[in-house]
Length: 287
Image 1 (spheres, one colour):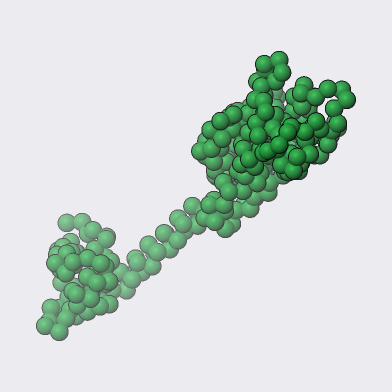
Image 2: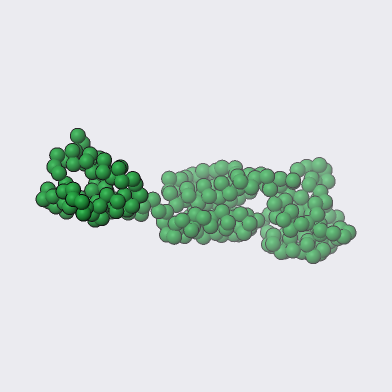
């Protein structure tokens, strides 16, 4: 009979407790189970391990001889489990370049459980209105609205972000429009904003979405904003299509350097981002 190495734990527990009841409590098992497994272990080894007394269980000479090896096996198994746990941890640094609108409401909460589970993982989240260059290793992952057309990159569309023309929660629609400065590389959104404004429409230009949302909330103007940011701010949707009937939508792509696709740290961050977006996909539409 081949020994069942899980019975080694029973042997050590009974040795340390000196009674079936004590070993059963340590192992959170029944007394009959402990007794049966000790008998099975003795049969498998072919030697008696304990002397049974009314006062408890005492190791035989054979049991005493085997005890150091049993303890060494226990220590080796504990070391193996610890090494496996270390290997399972995700360590290192991951740089994520993101669209501004996704950072605070989505990326930070999406990464919180992952960072809590893996203290050795560092994540940098970068925002710029300029497209980062993954080939120069400016970032390991990028969330972008323009699909790259060259390079050794893995590209995945994760969601379609919808936009609308929004005004303050109450009151008349202001004449002023809130938008991006002309030099910011967000030509599509600027073009949508201009489609609703005349040549003499007064403007407030600001290069952060958070400031644009606040400006609209305070009644300073109208703005073309992502639905999933404007709705929680309780802004009033004025139009979800352009004056010519065209849709205001932009695909969002997750781009990864192909040579990092097998990296556990990069794939863990990528999976957390994709799962978070998928769970909130409905929020990106017009509602």
